[in-house]
Figure 1: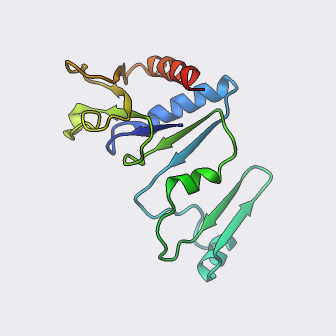
Figure 2: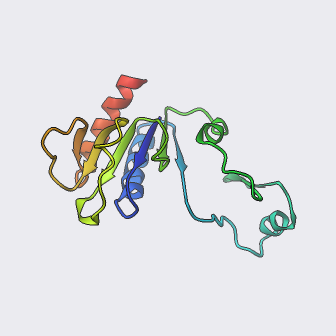
Length: 165
């Protein structure tokens, strides 16, 4: 498991799309958990599943020959911890977690100095690599990767995965 963290607008999802697509093309099964601070609307409000959820169903499963999804309404309950969410996933060769900066997981930080936000790596010993469009500062302990060369990030991730498999 590896968390991909960084500030909004840094390019996490774009990088993840490339990494997931490349790893899946190699035959690896990759799961992704995406954290959001916003409400999530996965179905149009007038669809049957949304109507049943809004009527009070605790969970609604939408199933088709192509995919299925389970929507659980928290109805004021606390957000489940990441460990509980991960337990719902099928086994995979790699699970990538987008977000969850606060979790004690190994992390790949996506950092763009132009955003004007402080990097996470100086204060988080769990950051094992930084993908950035800026130069590495002196004395950085994490692997420094070129965000504009996603193939290099993929090579690093493949080596990291081999080492931790």
